Amino acid sequence: MTHDLPFFDCNAFIGRAIARQPGAPETPDELLAEMDRLGIEQALVYHAWARLGDVAEGNRALEREIAGRERLHACWVLLPHQTGEGADPVRLVAEMRERGARAARVFPNDHMFPLAEWCFGPMAAALAESDIALLVDFGRTHWRDPCTDWDAVRGLCLAHPRLKVILVREGVAADRWLYPLLGELDNLFVELSYYQIHAGLAEIARRFGVERLVFGTGLPAFAAGGPMAAVLFSQLSDDEKRTVAGDGLKRMLGLGPQ
Amino acid sequence: MIVDAHGHLGSWEATHIPAGDSAGLVRTMDACGVAAICVSAFAAIGPAPRLGNDLTMAAAEAHPGRIYGYASVNPNFSEEVRPELERCLAHPAMRGIKLHAGTHAYPVEGEGYRPAFEIAHERGLCILIHGGTAAVLRGLAERYPRANILSAHVGGWDGRSPSDMVDACRDCPNLYADLASSVAPFGALEALVERVGADKVVFGSDTPLLDQRFALGRVLFSALDEQVKGQVLGANAGRLLGLAQA
Image 1 (spheres, rainbow over the protein chains, first blue to last red):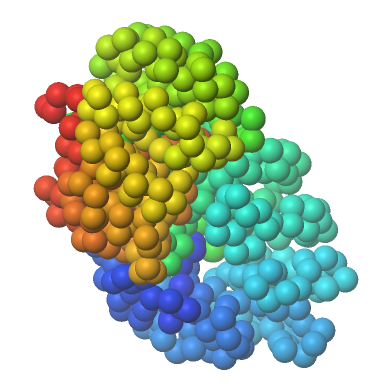
Image 2: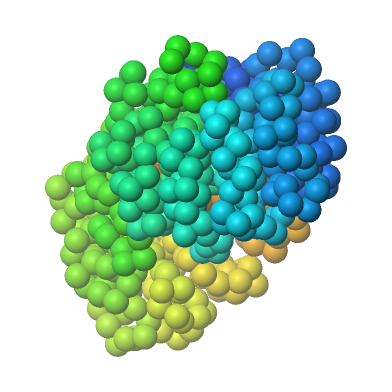
């Protein structure tokens, strides 16, 4: 299946998952090979160890393992700072910048912390100040098992209007939560890997603007073909498809024309 | 020819569905290059089978050759089951039967559904079933060998864990695996085809509850070879639903 869209996956990881899917890539080069097969140009990646084990060590492993691979961009996993598991937010975000990290990601459910101001607020403020986007992943695995803290997402976006928040792996049967928030919050974005609403991309684009949609796959836990086809076969214009596929993310990460 | 063997029609109480009417479905199919779809209206798998079946037949008449239908029944009103199926299946676009044991809160093997299996067996029809354990579907497949049972949502299998349902689809010649699933684990489609056979995996999307594009892309961008993709995307469903292949 060939195409000419500049896909840039905002939702991928490297490293060993709890269980390896059949034929799934694990190393950066294996991931790049799969991206080549699919026609995905670039990816924003975190390290599985930063989610499943030690955040700081996982972020360091990410830096080491993707070094020299220009199509892979580092996404650091973050925790709230108060326990001392991470540096002071301002220093940590400065370090992210120095070491080439393009975005940050949090797993509030896996890592058991709230996004509330009294906990994650200082980190969110530091990210906003440095214009680093934050991917929020509640670890949703099926639409019948809702686990997203929508009030927390709303509170985060309201408290930090300059922080770009990308909600990851959400969407099936979620419009009744999502639409009010997209209408209220200009800094909320939707990653596509689970946004499987019928004709939903065109509807979001029409109501809230196409730039609110960010391509992502969940590779290598999930197959990438679904979200790719969602963009390719959407009822969006060619320019809009390019925005969703990758141009919008490039702008958000400071990698393309502003 | 791409054929979607698992579709719906209309609105559903649990979630917002844009463009879920027949015109919206056909617009999506045109964008995706899907030739035909077989649907059951949400009303038909919910509390109003007769209303829903009428909606399905009206959609098929509005889009001949593009939309086909499954007749659905509510086993909790068992006296209505056989007459409603016979009424609907007299329509040439109604190509099978859809049972949704979940919404009807009723066991697939229960007496209320028995006429559906008998008719499917008598006529060699496809019967798409949401619900039932692997053991139950095995038993039904053996008891009604001329019915072609399409087990809904087997496509959600992770591709690596033991699965009685996958094994049942492999073992029973008239039990098939529907791909429709919101979850598409990496490599699972390829593993499913390897496990049950390319002639037993059937493209279904659950659209418009889900977007047809996702299920289609899962196959198109898979590592399956092109011939197998053709079987999964169209030939198998065409055979089960009695649709001519281009």
